[in-house]
Amino acid sequence: MLEIYDILIIGGGVAAASAVLTAKNRGKTVAVVTNGEETSSLYRAESITNYPGLPAMSGKDMTQLFRRQIEENATDVISGRALNVMPMGDSFGVAVGNGFFQCRALILAVGITRENLYPGEGEYLGAGVSYCATCDGMLYRGKTVAVIGSGHEAIEDADFLEGIGCTVLRLRENGKYEIRGETKANRVLFKGEEYPVDGVFIIKDTVSVTRLVPGLEYENGGIVTARDMSTGVPGVFAAGDCTGKPYQLAKAAGEGNVAALSACEYLSKQK
Ligand SMILES: Cc1cc2nc3c(=O)[nH]c(=O)nc-3n(C[C@H](O)[C@H](O)[C@H](O)COP(=O)(O)OP(=O)(O)OC[C@H]3O[C@@H](n4cnc5c(N)ncnc54)[C@H](O)[C@@H]3O)c2cc1C
Image (cartoon, rainbow, N blue to C red; front, side):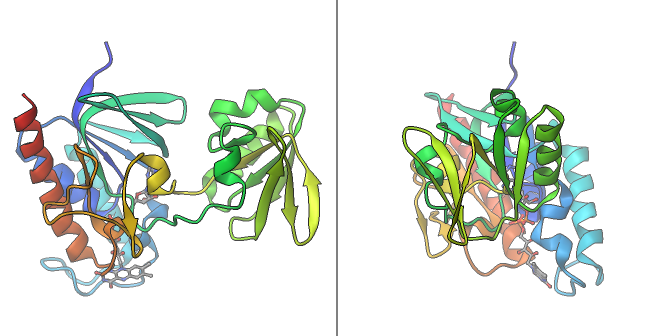
């Protein structure tokens, strides 16, 4: 039978690490869903000199310390991008690629996310627009698809789609694209030219949080939270850069700790 985790954390930076440690100390089962370490903001920092208790070190080295702590303390670490959270009464379902996981409380520690969608992205999602080549690639075998994205995963997905016989139009993430169609997306507009396609795969490192979790409020560049890091969706908490400025490690760690304590309190009231 599918294990239902007490808490599932989406993200793999300092906010997630802090939340894992606290939730584990409180005796909870914790799953962490995360992208590769190079997608954390911290990974790009040359030198960190303001994190208490640690000597100055590169962002890459510090990211690896947090990752190791997550791996050593989480019940399970699930590699990949969470695509969708489905509220299911007193639990949540989380889709990661082709996988599906369940939890009773959720902590979003996804770092800075962009809410802006390409024109047509929301409208055609599920109708020619997909966030997951592994899930939907076979539907486009032998057809022409656009892959929008610049990271590792976008390159791998474009290679995968070519491997199964698709003709792939590779587009970097930050271009001004518009997705058009009738009942389904069937063309991408770029620099005044229209490119006919059968499908569009958008492979960003993050999924906009309001799309990830229905009903979340987003304001001034962050998820709206109370002081206990609860969001407007019961059972969903948020921590770190995704709640807004200041974008600082110590703030993210503190919020991860508070979010985990609040999630534990929420769970104790559910029983
Ligand atoms: C160049 C640079 C220098 C910096 N220097 C400093 C400094 O000197 N001092 C300081 O205090 N702070 C500094 N910061 C800020 C600091 O790095 C951030 O505040 C901190 O990393 C935020 O941690 P986080 O856990 O909230 O997010 P992140 O570390 O960004 O981690 C979020 C993780 O979640 C993953 N994720 C997102 N969405 C999904 C999804 N749907 N599914 C799976 N995984 C997902 C992301 O890919 C990422 O790996 C710097 C930042 C940058 C960019």
